[in-house]
Length: 114
Image 1 (cartoon, rainbow, N blue to C red):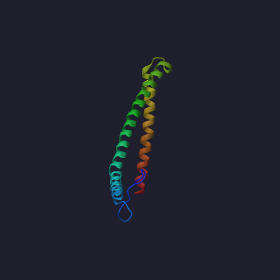
Image 2 (image 1 turned 135 degrees about the vertical axis):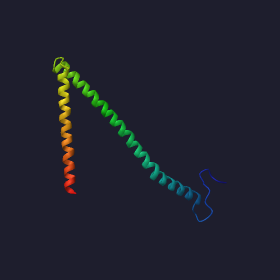
Image 3 (image 1 turned 45 degrees about the horizontal axis):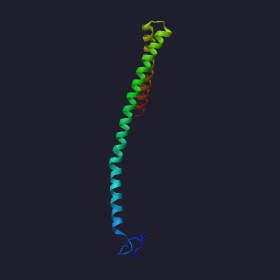
Image 4 (image 1 turned 90 degrees about the vertical axis):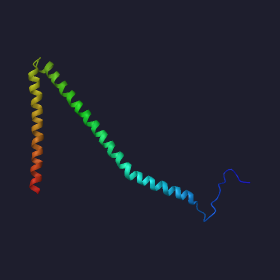
């Protein structure tokens, strides 16, 4: 009589060809899935999280600008809103000028290499 732990033994050649076939199919399907949908899922995740970060960064920048103008109006310039706008605008113009200068210098360096 068979014991509870005894498994049936394969009849031919000592190998279980059904298990090998199932493992091979699983390995091939997993490899194809990783090469196709795995890369697509990674790309979509990067896209979604990048857009989320861009939206959050924009909102934070807007709220920081509003807070800076209100704080400068109330505590820095004693109610003169135009002075707060002028000060924050000057900061933005300076920052934009620096970025534009950096972009044009990078463009010149690339054109010299060519």
